[in-house]
Length: 353
Ligand code: SF4
Image 1 (spheres, rainbow, N blue to C red):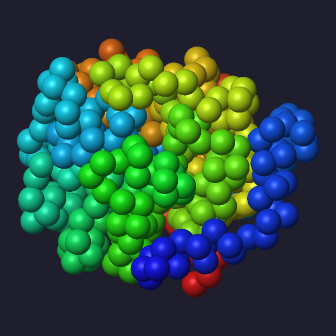
Image 2: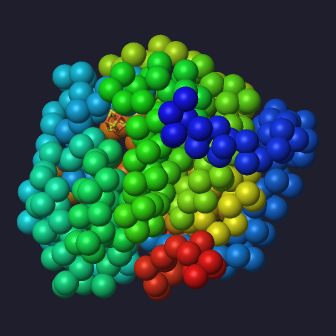
């Protein structure tokens, strides 16, 4: 058994079988009613992180991807996608725009790996850091450990890499180009490089079950992450899973999963990911009322947005960045949630240092 497999088992076994069976029971809606669960998650969020919501402006800077994840609309083999790569000079200007909108973090996300050299990404990071007070989150895939160190040295603050499923068999059946071990190793490398680390999984993958979902929740929690990003599985056209039903027991499964994650991870940043608006018109608002504390308004120029559709029904595809900036403020005002005026670094690290 490889070291990382042993680590994985150790992480999964960190929690007792009793906790797992409790989570399964909650997911099956036998243990506690959803509204009580949401109230508890919201209380825990309020107590540990306050009411503030952190805005992280996201720039989907390229939709090129070398991977073929079975569920993803921009997988390499989907030749119906018009590929784009935003020039880094423009990405820099979009970052300045983020600051003008009052965002304190910019998230640079692309397919894997990003079609720019690590050196050029580092130059962009350094330039943004030298001219603004923005925090930077990168999310562009698996690299050798030395590259994560290079990103950190250039000034990158955080890195997001979802493991998608903790079930090795399921993971391997959906990811022809990478193993779960490689992905988890990358997460360890990211943390070792000194980057605040984010990860998460897809909720409701075909082939998953309440038991695998409970394992996903437990692995996420055992990783002691700074940020936890999860979204619902949605059947994307032109993908091998386009005809497969999701695990979906009930729509509340998605929200219950996030609420349990909040209860087990009181100090993690948990975004209301955009995909929640694809399952409910006010899905992101519901996540914020049920334990979420981060919102990611889109900064990608309108002309590129329709080509970055990992899943169907993605919201805000026809909006401009300025409209997203106005929309998020109205949404948060309706929820009576103040906007954080700081970059929203790791609460976990603040707690242990
Ligand atoms: S999920 Fe990410 S790595 Fe997988 S195909 Fe889509 S963009 Fe590429």
